[in-house]
Length: 465
Image (cartoon, rainbow, N blue to C red; front, side, top):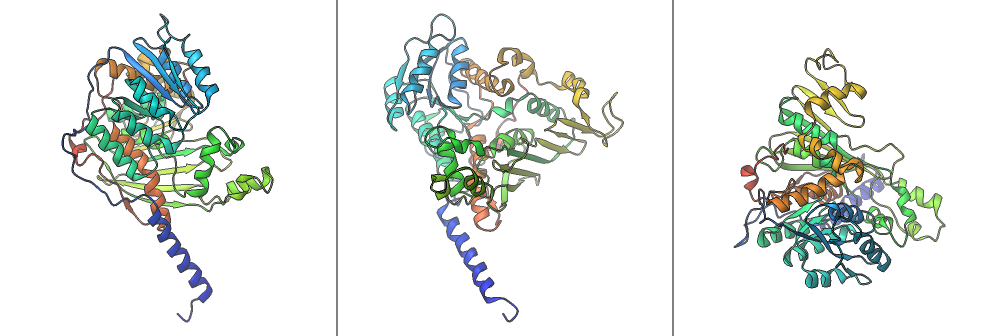
């Protein structure tokens, strides 16, 4: 050890020990698979009995809940039966507004629950809704989804589905035991470009798929203004306590469906993850809040930018990035690359082997801007063509309404959902796996097989018309 600086050696080995200790406090990822419990069934292609009338309850009507409430209330054959929120003013506001939504005054008997952290439990037991939308803070997603299924409801939960691996397994097990849907509401899968890319992949326009890139790059430091109430009040502490990719699903969901991951063709296998230094949140807090402010009492340990690499069972690769801190434009990347071409988002661009007839001569030039209109005419997803007018203005370019429309349509017609419980679990698992990998200096982490091998028999998502 003659050439090694002793102080640096002690510092480095101490950091390595700290990383191992930190990893031990994270969710255990050792449960790669397990036997399905007696009486449970596989939910991959599950279609629940038809619900002619869908009785809807919403837990959380702050940021995202009102969107799901309003659009589901506007659809025929639905009834809003309960609204729960921690705050009385929000619960009462949206109950009053819901009564005027839809036709035939369908939403008149709405029970409201508020003022207590456990009020949602009383709602589930007393109202017994058919469907529950969960739009609360991340830590509540799994407990609420699990109990709602146990009380007989199908559950539609905001992203991520859960924050620990144990919670994800419990959600999967509960769904299989109760035969109730639990879908993570990944609305980005219903964007126009995402749907078109899915259609192009299914039609073989880019050949055999090799690689994808996904991200959630969205500067959200302004949410720190929400100190006692609102998204920032509960989301900000996550940046201090956790170091990894905390919000992977908006970018990853569409790429996973392009690749048919968890659906017959391929599946998630292994992940490595690295985070940049953690600087932006500490700097922002110091510059914008008094020294004694609660944000300045936190040490924001989560790296400003996380990059994770996933390798699939077939050897394909996916880069997944996350950054809610840096001053840069919004992007989900949305890249899918094949042997015959590449599709990219932000901005939307297409390059195909041999070019696109009438526009480009070869793959060295992008089809972009107004040139994309001919591709939309040829490849627009039939679901977008059918529902784009009906869902316009519903939020996020109409993708929110299209997602809720499909949820209600599938329940009323007794069809499998567009996203099954296992997809929500796989996509959400990137967060705890990345935290573990970062804590172990990039050590590879194996994905659990939430399907217990049944993904090989699961049908790929059809091009729904």
